Image (tube, rainbow, N blue to C red; front, side, top):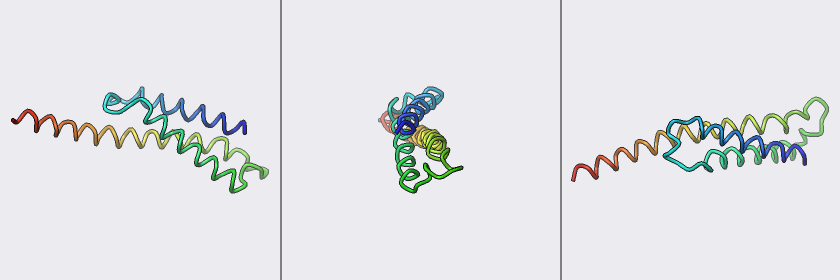
Length: 100
C-alpha cells in the first residue's frame, strides 16, 4: 500500500510540473494534467499489482516505477493535445467574433 501512496504523490507532482512548464497552460486548468497523471498512475498500479508483478522476485520495481513514468507520460500527452486543440479552437472563435 505504501507504493500506491508514493505513486499517487509522485504522479500528481509530475502533473503539476508538466502544467507549470507548458507555455500554453492558461488554456486549460491546473488540475487537468495532475488528474490525468494520477489516473494513469493509479490504473497502471492496480493492473500491475493485480497481475502479481509486485510480489515476484526481480519484478517488484514495476508497480513502484512504471506507474510514475506512465503517469508523467500521460500528463505530457494530455498537455500537448489540449494545448494545441484549445489554442486552435480559441483562435478560430476569436477570428469569427472579430469578423462581425
